Image (cartoon, rainbow, N blue to C red; front, side):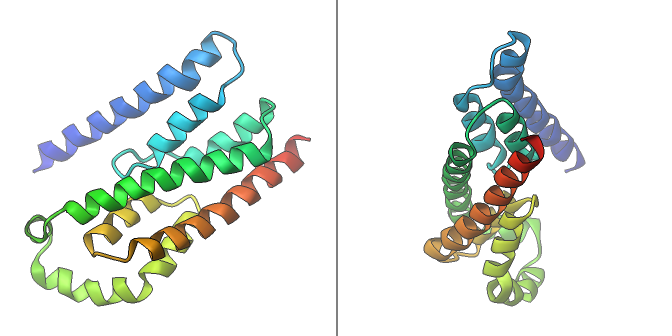
Length: 174
């Protein structure tokens, strides 16, 4: 089991390095202004549950390169929401047998009530701050949360976060 985790880690690391190298990295080496397409690809990838990247750091960088704050906010929310729909769907497709193999049924039942009670608030907070919200969205899918509720709380958390990041960064870089 330990080897699987190590292999998983290196595969995820390889994916992160590849995505960054073929998008933003290539633009930097070629001394081109980073494009909105590279932002979208990297940001979308960072919101998939199996690739954990601090994509919030892209906002100040792209703003400093001259991209409009409102454009960055819209792209950030759209790409994050699309990735989170995929995360939720993959979690939803995971069977209960798989879950019980990773954690015991007793542990699952013990935490299920708490997660269902406070889960949407956790989704809001995890989207509001640079925490690993994609993993939480994946778990929400496993627990069969209502997709509308997950997306609503994700949207508001992301909206607030990216408005603060974009306009806060604009203030410092202006």
